[in-house]
Length: 477
Image 1: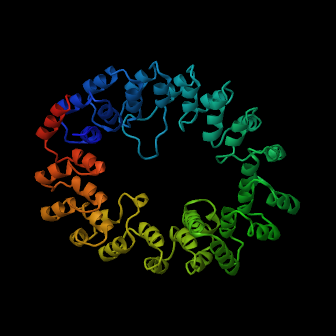
Image 2 (image 1 turned 30 degrees about the vertical axis):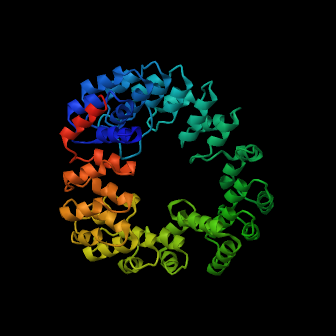
Image 3 (image 1 turned 180 degrees about the horizontal axis):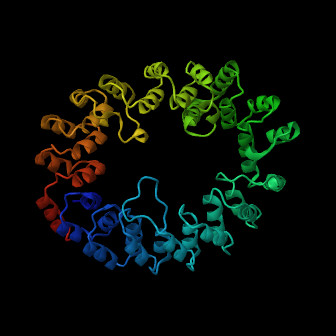
């Protein structure tokens, strides 16, 4: 095999849940496979961990400490690693809801690492949500500006004395980062922060605007300042209209999200934005507005009285309907959303409706597709999703549906084989891991021109163990 294909095979085998212990031990001898083992295997045995650590490379140790299944004892051991990169990885923050057994970093370990001689390690502790208050207070006075910046960036509600210290820090990056989170700066510091170019745009949302100050900020050379001003709820109407003609499209987009626009003004501003933009600019405008429902700019609509939210369902702008679709609505309003012309609106509404019929689920998936951020379970994973739909998807003209057909473990073997030869590589990737894919097709996919397919088939649970050993023999492992 050529070297790139070999790398993808080894990395795939390292992820294969059916790989036996002897195969895993042999894989530990290949650096690219060892990194995959250390980072992703949730079934690492004690002896395999020792083999990985014996390799002596900081990169492997760093990947090992990122493994969500690594226990507390090993974390303490790696906290004494000679390489600061490894020690800094020990308190690395994990996504909520994805923390595995034994993955939690104890307050005692965080306190121990907060005294590490390397600033990067102390900064990693400062960024951890579970760092004790006493540790964060101490790190807020750390001699290294990077550590103080991490405290400012990741501590959302520090005590007022700490907040004041960070907001008046000698290092500009510390002052700026302090306003990235939810901390509200004391009013007496507003003039100082407003005069600082790095914190000017970030303090705007907290200001009590006068007409004079609003007009001054609307003429600021920094577009970040004008963008922040465009979202201020206390913006005078005259300044709002001035920003609606701002030369920067994303400033005008922020005006489009305001609560105090009439629908006529909203339509006019949107028409002006898209008329002035080229194709790339129009994509930007629609992309910016298309994700606005996930941010805070439309909090006013999500928390509006029911009558205001129901009126927004008739808006021609999908971004407003998307914001409303995720709120509590009467059943008849939700039913209207299931037929909305915007696919994202329909997906949001479906997420809020656990009792959808199988027929409606299938129609939503066929017409709108899935959105991974709305799962699990996604629409096709719900218990009442009609399994017969996967048979239709397997032969559908749309490759998106053919890809989705592979999610059915009961799909007939002949259809799985057909999908494994699909002209679209992402469909072949999905078919490569199907439990009903025959061995002869596995062998063909191992030689696929797309290395993502090679990786997927090597990681497939149905990949024969004798083949694994044969491939390792060929690689000299």
